Amino acid sequence: MAASDRNPRSTVQVAGHPIHPMLIPFPVVLVVSTLFCDLAFWRTGSGSWATATLWLLGGALFFGVFAALAGLADFIGEPRIRELTDAWYHFVGNAVALLLTLANFYLRYVNGPSAVMPEGLILSLIVVGIFLFTGWKGWEMVYRHRVGVADREAGPL
Image (cartoon, rainbow, N blue to C red; front, side):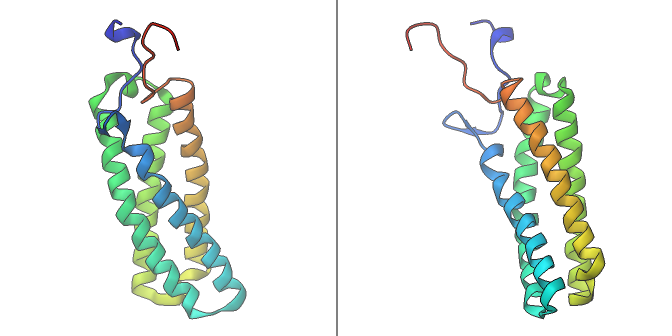
């Protein structure tokens, strides 16, 4: 099979499995959990919810950096990925989400529970919204453009 006929490859992989899609669920779940804890704080006023959000955002940043590095390596390492408009939306959107998550963490770290309402809640809502969009673009890359999908070899199935 000619190189131009092959699917765009992930450059960071283990045994042919792309690493980036394995890492992205962690920061997404942690940020969505932050949003739910923000809503619980708004409803109850309990400082334990604010403490939980600080830990959740810290975890989101930790895993988000690794997911971003794997995604960046794929983006830089495969020219056909950079040619996709969906890849640019995915890349830029997730970079913005990571920076907003860092700002959200910093505000809460410095200001404590008072940072949850309304700034923290608004930042959480924005990042979850960005993740909905960038997740859609990521799936467009996989399902429409077959990024990271194994090539089928000729022969019987």
